[in-house]
Image (cartoon, rainbow, N blue to C red; front, side, top):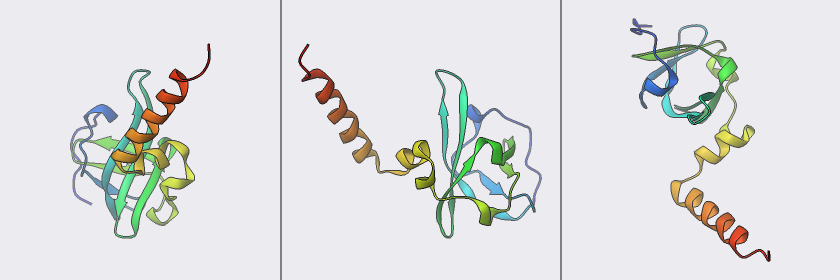
Length: 113
């Protein structure tokens, strides 16, 4: 594992940053940072691995640095994003997310008042 640089907040973590597991083995790279920035709540990371996308919950993230992430668990223990509702939604294509949001908005607008 190479030096990861200065610690950073989740808001400054770049997509594509390398992700290392608890054994300092390269597991993949950051695909998405999942957070509610309005409430300043970090939820976790969607990690792109050779075996597909995996989800690292905030409790499984030990350190965030300018040049990478260190996890608290072995990479093999990361779950698929579908195991977490927020991560599953982020892992869907943007078009599907937009359609779902529009459908919910239409349902709300078309309800009798």
